[in-house]
Length: 408
Image (tube, rainbow, N blue to C red; front, side, top):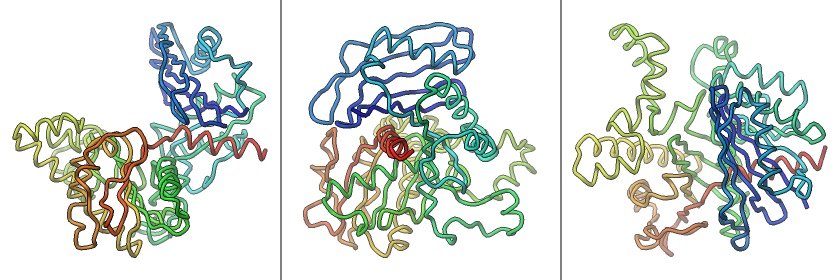
């Protein structure tokens, strides 16, 4: 039996899942947070089978509040939870540890066995992802201390988009400046886009190599990807996750001159502008709420600001949808995933509403139904299939980590 421990580490917390790979079943999951604060918190959940390839949580959730000064201490707390609550890491010994790393730059285009040199590269790439890579590296080092005999594998959010052609990833700025500071589109959410594109192809029983797909990963962070033959050819996020779609608190695309105007006329510092565009913009900036459920409640109540925020959100989705259909030369599959994409039928319907001229149609009854798995929400006569595909980034990381571990 192969078991993979998946770790998603940030600067002050990390999440984990223990996955049995034969049935692709989650055995346990948890989060260790408030690392470095006077009192940290750790939550551990033991899972039980709930049917084929499914899980249901049993009454086996424990929460501890103890000092957790650093990530190494956090892993010690995690190991104590496994020992006390199960499942046994002796009976379910991990084959490998898979780590989510946000930024691999142009250096890492596939899952990579972590060596001291790889750690150095992840550290050096922190210049491109200062909020994410340092925390991932802390988690990697703590995990390697906790599991020194296991292969540790880095799975990069940017890797799936390394197939972008130069025309898609190149910014039209001075070439020497761009090269000196590595300014180009990298794209993010790649692990999710890869998982969804492959899951959609498998569900439709069609070769991924033959499909033209557009994927909308819509959560608090949001991105779109155009996937041709299983490879990403364009994506909405760019040098950072700020670009592209309107998000919960991020602006998405704006004229770069807005930054100059804010600096010159509003006397805002770079830090203040950074905070404005990343943390105080998007749906929150337009409507005063960052959660799409709250936004939709306000739209239903007739709130004008909320309606405008919704309209801007949909306008941007349609703009990328149309652009990517042209880039792909047509469309076979449109998939919606992540929190908003999987749970908001109104946003799904509005996004593809104007594609009637291409013969793409949503079935209102199918779209309105809720379900736990992949489902078709287009009509039987639609010229492209529209799907809801629940994403599973942890499983994708586990799959990729296991392949590398077995080859190493």
